[in-house]
Length: 73
Figure 1: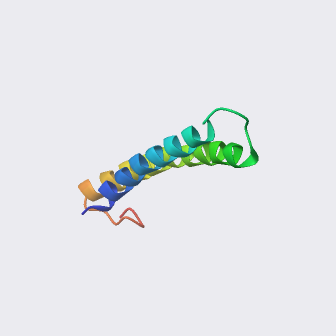
Figure 2 (figure 1 turned 90 degrees about the vertical axis):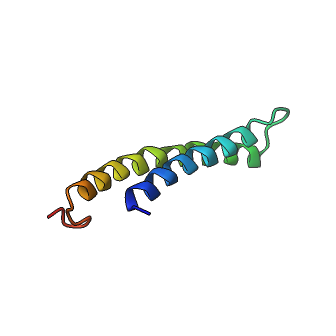
């Protein structure tokens, strides 16, 4: 499996984890500290997705050109 595919998969997984954590934090009723932490964790994890997708695109471009993933040459 290509490294770019792994990064794309991680991007989608982080979206799923983010949505799950965020929705667990919005269960309704009185909001305790645990629910607020889950919401914040969900928002924090949401920031990972764009990073994984950008890195996946960079790695994919380098793979297509048969360049080194580290040095780009």
